[in-house]
Length: 112
Image (cartoon, rainbow, N blue to C red; front, top):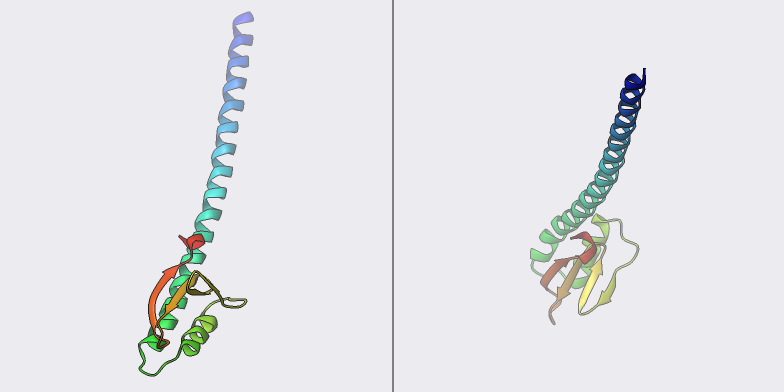
């Protein structure tokens, strides 16, 4: 009788332990999926803005305002702002030369 009580107690502890492990794995997977989804959305937004800017920036005679307007239309952007020599439009930073042409572009540090 005593032996069966130990076996039942051991199996109960094992069951609770494995259920706790599976609960942890499920929560961890949900959190990881959430971060993955956020990362995907940021990368997709950056790519959409970059692809929208490319034809406008490559067109002869396009101005800085044309390029920024194309980036604003492509992304969910509140308002472009300037910082460290770059005009930040959503997730991409555009650096313009003295002639108003794009000379450099970089993704936001947050979207990396």
